[in-house]
Amino acid sequence: MIHTTADGGTVEVRRVGITFDMHVRDPAGRTVATVTMSADDAYALLLDLEDLEP
Image (cartoon, rainbow, N blue to C red):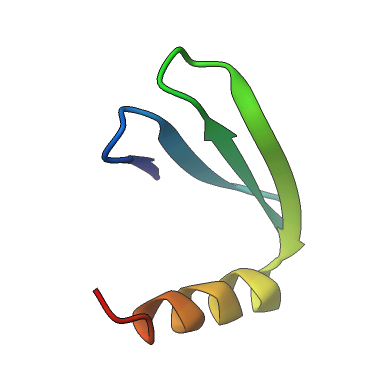
């Protein structure tokens, strides 16, 4: 899954075996951060995001 941010960057989430990798890139495509998390942590992150006010 790839999500394009308002400023043109991207957040890519990919399953790698039993974990998820999240790659955050700036509008020029440079990697800003790479995070590896368990499936439980990824699910918890999604739940937290749903609770945010727009």
